[in-house]
Each structure stands twice: as C-alpha cells, then as structure tokens.
Image 1 (tube, rainbow, N blue to C red):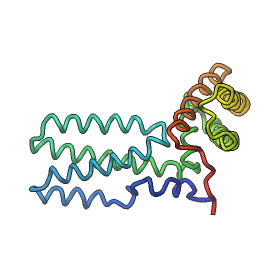
Image 2: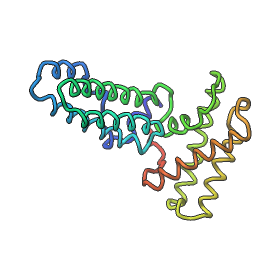
Image 3: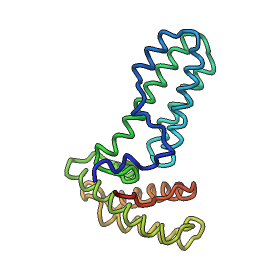
Image 4: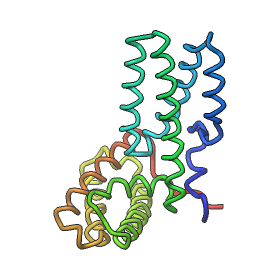
Length: 213
C-alpha cells in the first residue's frame, strides 16, 4: 500500500517533517540572547532522530559522523559566529534527515527494504536494473523475515549463522541483475548484507514484517 514506510518505527522517531525549519531560523535570527540554548535544543532533536535512524538505516552512519563533526567544532569555539554557524549546519542536517526519511516512500519501499536496497547499490545501474534491484531487496527482506522469525537468537550460534548467510547468498545469486552484477559482486554484497543483518539483530532491532492496514 501507499506510505507503508512512513508509519514504521513510530515512537522511536522525532517527526522532522512537522518541524518548521524556516520559522526556527527566523526565531533564531531575532532572539539573540538564548542562542546557545537554541543550538542545544536542535542538537538534541537531531541526535534523537539520528539514533532512531542508526538502528534501521546503513546510510545514517554518514549523517551521524557529520553531526559529531559539527558538535566537535561547536565545542571548540563557542563564540557568537560559531554558534550561528552551528545552528545553520544543524538545521541543514535536520533537513537532510527529513528528506532521507521521505526517500523510502518516494522509492515505493519500506524503510527496511530501502536499507537493503542501499546496501546492494554498489555499481552504476540503469533504470531497468534499478527496478530489478528493488525487487531483489523486497524478495530478500521477505525471506529474511521468515527465517529470522523462526530463530530469534540466530546470531549467537554458528549453525544458524551459516543458515542466514546461505539464505542471503542464495537469494542474491538468484535475484541480482546480471549484468552488471557478477558472482563476485553477489558474494561481496551478501557479506555486506549479512554483517548489517547481524548487527541489527544483535542490537535487538529485528526485521518484523510491517503491519499493513
């Protein structure tokens, strides 16, 4: 259905799409006195948002590094110019995160499908290959949901780890667009997906099927 990716992980997420960034910028420009507090407020909001995304999105790590750099710079120099610059950078980052969240909906994928799709996009691909890659992501997620549901602590045991590894490799061998993908690509991407799935499961963020209305 439409907008399926949207309602996932509610409760965890700060809904940045409801934040009026322009209004925040205007208020910040006018209320000179409490600029440090304003920066801390938006930093807290961005961090909360990022932590929720980190559990579900491989791309969130890049954003998180950017966030940490902004905060490190801010902590070094707390003069007025830096405070204003930090605020602008944080607002831009928050806007990027908001766009990142909408990307799943625009791609017609759930957040989990998009996470796998991002991991599988290792090469320049045509529109047709992109469609195949989306289908591969959906297929892989579906198969993963089934196998992981049947063994919740799979990541603690060598035998179940091997089962998950084999499943990922089998699916990718079968579903990846060839060309441009090769057997080597399938192996490499399967390793990358396996690491991601392992980390998520170990962190207690599963791949539960999305409840469809």
